[in-house]
Image (cartoon, rainbow, N blue to C red; front, side, top):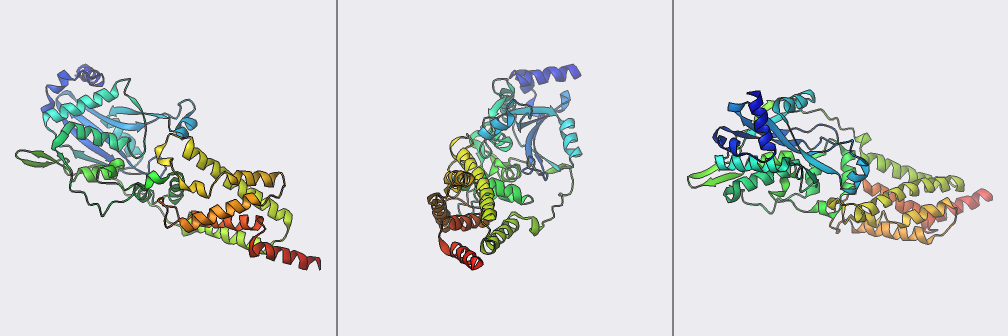
Length: 399
């Protein structure tokens, strides 16, 4: 029996499914949905397909979105959007053991497919398992562990698959959906909001929302298969294969990005008003503009040098622009050209005033940072009351 199961798996992996498809009536196919964990790699949850052949003892799980940390130049390839992801298959017992150890809930839903539809799912997975198809370029919104399952089911069911009528009045953006998933991790939300450009503000219809495992399960549960005899739900009721309480995530407002950056802005504003030491101000500005310069280079990379489509057309480059690097260099060499700081002041103010009108959502925690940039670039531009006050205090000190 073990040898027969191994031979059967070999045939499935390499696309020779004729012997398997003869008994697809007894085959059962399930959608598995794994709950999120509180870490950046697992915060969105996970989706997989389980195929069970009871008569042959065949019980395996197929999932996409797997990558290898040992890949050569892993970080660079990941940043460039050229890291190859792959399909993975595993024994169901090992799959469930992994998430039992991680104490994550696993929900199973049987997929109501006919023999021909089951055979198509098996054939498509087998094609994915072939060496030339195993690896693919991952896309967070449009080609991941959840969307691959959606696409396979759409191909298997074909025109008989029916989604509910689209409510165009209730269409969250892709950014809003991931922010909701990232709610327990506000610093991760800040990072994704900074890096994701205008593509993240695309409105997500019923089908597009299924890039998240939770939405895949929820939306496919509303879908049906239209037969002549009537409509059959695509998914059966969920069954918990593992059940664990949701991890506790205490929300400490004092550690939130908005509170910390607001406090930073108030502190820098007070220092700008009260401290007249030119050496201190010079090193303060060099540190601040150095950090902003790094963020500006990140914006350049996101807009022009990565293949991650979600990072393109990032309007944060308006205030995190290349002039910051020039200003930082001028501080390093201790020259005093005010033109660069005036350009930074102008672009920062324009961006802040344009926030209600631009086609990109900006995280509220970034506003105090923009205000810091406006404050210090105004001081360096020899403009405004801060510089006047600083000069006046300096003159009073001389007297």
